[in-house]
Image (tube, rainbow, N blue to C red; front, side):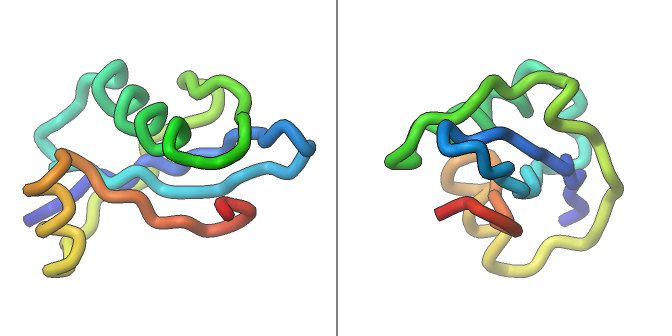
Length: 87
């Protein structure tokens, strides 16, 4: 499965900038859907964050998904790769 990678930076309430990627099947191009996946992820965090819009989240590239990524996408529609300040 090919996935689109959306590079995302969102400010936390403590001032740190979270950096994570939202991965979706490459045929999903609707930004509202992708941003909603990101908001779903952020709502599960134990801290508050800033908004998630096209200013914070942009298409980066397409890559081949691993088995773990495919499994998560099949379960919830998307996969998150946490990079910085996500916990």
